[in-house]
Image (cartoon, rainbow, N blue to C red):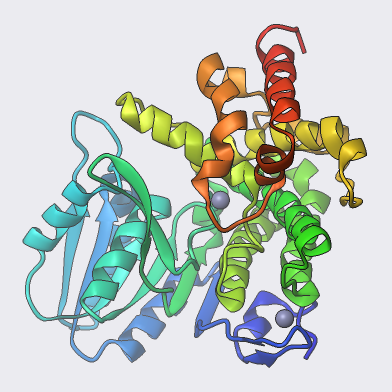
Length: 396
Ligand SMILES: [Zn+2]
Ligand SMILES: [Zn+2]
């Protein structure tokens, strides 16, 4: 059944037996990104929760939306408790074992339904806690900054190592468009960078399909490709915080998560650009540094991988989808996004090594980094040198 042209609200209403041989299930009940996002969320939560509700936020997202959500739920006389994850020494909350443990210790017993108010970190933590307690949750997003809203996994730091941990999708995703529009601009550029990376995710999926006969679904790939196209079309309006530009990013981010869930694999949403970022994050965590916001790093890594393809595509045995590197870089720059790893703050040695060892971030996903490491290590090393020189020595 064709579904790549459906709007996100329609998409989640059905499951889709597909020509690719799979049955794609979005596993989501409700998505509402509008002026009425919070009101609709309250209605949904009251309908879903049979007992005590727990609202979880951090200090910032409590002020942005958490307090309103809590008050509106309490007005209904529904048994509602809340927890604000505290910042330590002005450092934003980290999605690690310590934060999860403390949240559990502070949690009253008998919670029936969880509400996450926030974006990346809050959602990642509530996803894991609700999953392990076998309870459902809904998320009220406060920024269109990353593609994990509809993911089944959370990226957590356990014993100082970043891991992708099994969780569950929220049953509902809600956001008030006015809140999204007023999010810090760095979070809007992060969301845009993460959305644009879907072009490379699909390119690499096709690359492995053509080279290794990997299973591929044009409908699922088409979903994320079209969502990225929609964001590019409205990108010039992002700096003005245009409503449609912001909604397009939020919907594309949610859709990317849904697409990965429908395919039961992260293929549609991430490729070697995410592996570079994963490598950078791990090296930063090892040194006790705070790594850049995920989507901003992904946007930069996308530019790096585009340049890598340009260096090697003539030597590949299959034709790869051409993304026009200059065009991608200009789209990102015009929207105010970072495109250079040096100015993003990635040290030269970490950058160089990420080209060589980025492939180790996934043993199952075949990317251009996997391919070069397997068949032409000398070329990969040469590319690492060329790219490092381009970004860290030459003036761009
Ligand atoms: Zn399919
Ligand atoms: Zn991402």
